[in-house]
Image 1 (cartoon, helix red, strand yellow):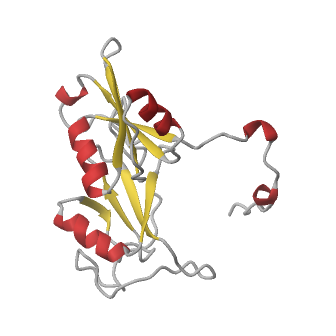
Image 2 (tube, rainbow, N blue to C red):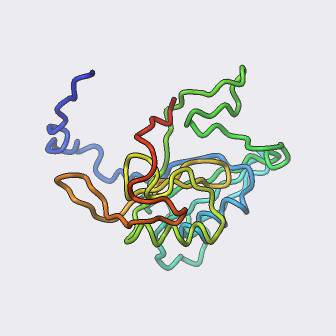
Image 3 (cartoon, rainbow, N blue to C red):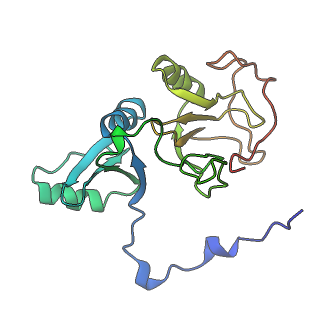
Length: 210
């Protein structure tokens, strides 16, 4: 078994002066159908579209969504500046024409065979994005009512109290509680989840990169 490194020094290290003002502004994922993806990230996950930009000469469009709902500036230039200074956005990139391809188009990084030359699953590095909420079980009841695809309901698997759902392209979204027991890592649980799985049900932990 690999030894677990001591990473405490990275918590106390001083920030390099040159990086002050840097913002973790975006994570980009490619999407097949922008309307389906925007509906998922806004209506299902509660985000807001900040900016949409089309680049017809290069046959792609981008859509920046954010969990923040600050008032948007009126001018396009001001909205772009607002977007670029908003932390934690997701950039949904639509390559024109991808919507015409059958099935899912992009590899999600989780033992996914999409796009592989030999049709075998790829051990990808990308795993998921994460959303925290006040009540995972209530959130998952809503997701189920909206027809969202689950990979793991809160009581399934070895880790109880968290869930995984899929966006329209198959990217995983982890659903976590805002708070949990810091000493044990235990999360708030309920006896039965949205899929009818009992708290003592499910299997052990599985590494989805394999």
